[in-house]
Image (cartoon, rainbow, N blue to C red):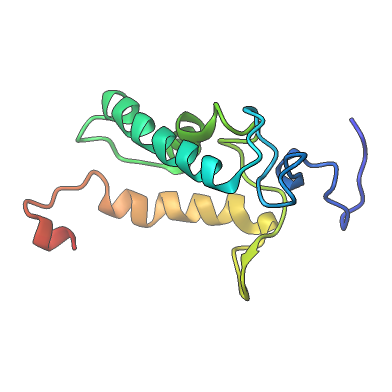
Length: 131
Protein backbone atom coordinates (compact mmCIF):
# COMPACT_ATOMS: atom_id res chain seq x y z
CA UNK A 1 0.00 0.00 0.00
CA UNK A 2 1.30 3.42 -0.92
CA UNK A 3 2.07 5.65 2.07
CA UNK A 4 0.75 9.18 2.08
CA UNK A 5 1.39 12.18 4.25
CA UNK A 6 -1.29 13.53 6.54
CA UNK A 7 -1.96 16.30 4.01
CA UNK A 8 -1.88 14.27 0.80
CA UNK A 9 -5.07 12.32 0.25
CA UNK A 10 -4.47 11.49 -3.41
CA UNK A 11 -3.76 7.83 -2.59
CA UNK A 12 -7.18 7.38 -1.01
CA UNK A 13 -9.83 5.82 -3.25
CA UNK A 14 -12.53 8.17 -1.96
CA UNK A 15 -10.46 11.22 -2.96
CA UNK A 16 -10.10 10.22 -6.60
CA UNK A 17 -12.22 11.26 -9.55
CA UNK A 18 -13.30 9.02 -12.37
CA UNK A 19 -10.97 9.45 -15.35
CA UNK A 20 -12.73 11.41 -18.08
CA UNK A 21 -15.22 13.04 -15.68
CA UNK A 22 -13.42 16.41 -15.58
CA UNK A 23 -13.30 16.14 -11.79
CA UNK A 24 -17.10 15.97 -11.44
CA UNK A 25 -17.65 12.28 -10.63
CA UNK A 26 -15.92 10.28 -7.93
CA UNK A 27 -14.01 7.19 -8.99
CA UNK A 28 -16.55 4.41 -9.18
CA UNK A 29 -16.85 0.70 -9.87
CA UNK A 30 -19.12 1.29 -12.88
CA UNK A 31 -16.82 3.60 -14.84
CA UNK A 32 -19.46 6.34 -14.94
CA UNK A 33 -18.07 9.68 -16.10
CA UNK A 34 -21.25 11.78 -16.32
CA UNK A 35 -22.57 13.56 -13.22
CA UNK A 36 -26.15 13.23 -14.47
CA UNK A 37 -25.73 9.51 -15.01
CA UNK A 38 -24.18 9.10 -11.56
CA UNK A 39 -27.08 11.03 -10.00
CA UNK A 40 -29.51 8.65 -11.74
CA UNK A 41 -27.58 5.57 -10.63
CA UNK A 42 -27.35 6.74 -7.02
CA UNK A 43 -31.11 7.50 -6.97
CA UNK A 44 -31.94 4.11 -8.50
CA UNK A 45 -29.65 2.38 -6.02
CA UNK A 46 -31.31 4.25 -3.16
CA UNK A 47 -34.72 2.88 -4.14
CA UNK A 48 -33.28 -0.64 -4.49
CA UNK A 49 -31.56 -0.33 -1.12
CA UNK A 50 -34.79 0.74 0.57
CA UNK A 51 -36.48 -2.40 -0.75
CA UNK A 52 -33.60 -4.53 0.53
CA UNK A 53 -33.36 -2.77 3.88
CA UNK A 54 -37.00 -3.29 4.83
CA UNK A 55 -36.25 -7.01 4.59
CA UNK A 56 -33.19 -6.68 6.84
CA UNK A 57 -34.52 -4.44 9.61
CA UNK A 58 -37.75 -4.97 11.50
CA UNK A 59 -40.02 -2.21 12.77
CA UNK A 60 -38.70 -2.84 16.26
CA UNK A 61 -35.01 -2.53 15.36
CA UNK A 62 -32.93 -0.08 17.39
CA UNK A 63 -30.32 1.37 15.05
CA UNK A 64 -26.66 1.93 15.93
CA UNK A 65 -23.57 3.32 14.21
CA UNK A 66 -22.77 -0.05 12.60
CA UNK A 67 -26.22 -0.11 11.02
CA UNK A 68 -25.58 3.25 9.37
CA UNK A 69 -22.42 1.87 7.80
CA UNK A 70 -24.28 -1.24 6.66
CA UNK A 71 -27.06 0.87 5.13
CA UNK A 72 -24.46 2.91 3.21
CA UNK A 73 -22.83 -0.32 1.97
CA UNK A 74 -26.19 -1.77 0.87
CA UNK A 75 -27.00 1.48 -0.95
CA UNK A 76 -23.69 2.29 -2.65
CA UNK A 77 -21.60 -0.88 -2.36
CA UNK A 78 -22.03 -1.65 -6.05
CA UNK A 79 -21.02 1.88 -7.02
CA UNK A 80 -18.09 2.86 -4.78
CA UNK A 81 -15.34 0.67 -3.33
CA UNK A 82 -15.37 2.71 -0.11
CA UNK A 83 -19.12 2.44 0.57
CA UNK A 84 -19.88 1.56 4.18
CA UNK A 85 -16.58 2.91 5.51
CA UNK A 86 -16.01 6.07 7.46
CA UNK A 87 -14.45 8.67 5.21
CA UNK A 88 -10.81 9.58 5.65
CA UNK A 89 -10.90 12.94 3.89
CA UNK A 90 -12.48 16.23 4.92
CA UNK A 91 -15.35 17.44 2.75
CA UNK A 92 -17.24 20.66 2.27
CA UNK A 93 -20.00 21.88 0.01
CA UNK A 94 -19.55 25.49 -0.94
CA UNK A 95 -18.39 27.20 2.23
CA UNK A 96 -20.05 24.62 4.53
CA UNK A 97 -17.53 22.14 5.99
CA UNK A 98 -18.82 18.71 7.01
CA UNK A 99 -17.58 17.05 10.19
CA UNK A 100 -13.82 16.54 10.15
CA UNK A 101 -12.98 12.99 9.05
CA UNK A 102 -10.91 12.29 12.15
CA UNK A 103 -13.97 12.90 14.36
CA UNK A 104 -16.43 10.73 12.46
CA UNK A 105 -15.98 7.47 14.43
CA UNK A 106 -16.54 9.31 17.71
CA UNK A 107 -19.47 11.31 16.33
CA UNK A 108 -21.10 8.18 14.97
CA UNK A 109 -20.68 6.44 18.32
CA UNK A 110 -22.35 9.44 19.99
CA UNK A 111 -25.15 9.29 17.42
CA UNK A 112 -25.68 5.62 18.22
CA UNK A 113 -25.72 6.14 21.98
CA UNK A 114 -27.83 9.30 21.77
CA UNK A 115 -30.47 9.99 19.09
CA UNK A 116 -30.47 6.55 17.48
CA UNK A 117 -30.91 4.89 20.86
CA UNK A 118 -33.52 7.41 21.98
CA UNK A 119 -35.58 7.63 18.79
CA UNK A 120 -35.37 4.12 17.33
CA UNK A 121 -37.35 2.08 16.97
CA UNK A 122 -39.77 4.73 15.76
CA UNK A 123 -42.91 4.36 17.83
CA UNK A 124 -44.89 7.36 16.58
CA UNK A 125 -48.45 6.61 15.57
CA UNK A 126 -48.90 9.40 13.05
CA UNK A 127 -46.90 11.24 10.43
CA UNK A 128 -47.66 14.55 12.19
CA UNK A 129 -45.81 13.39 15.31
CA UNK A 130 -42.82 12.27 13.26
CA UNK A 131 -42.59 15.59 11.41
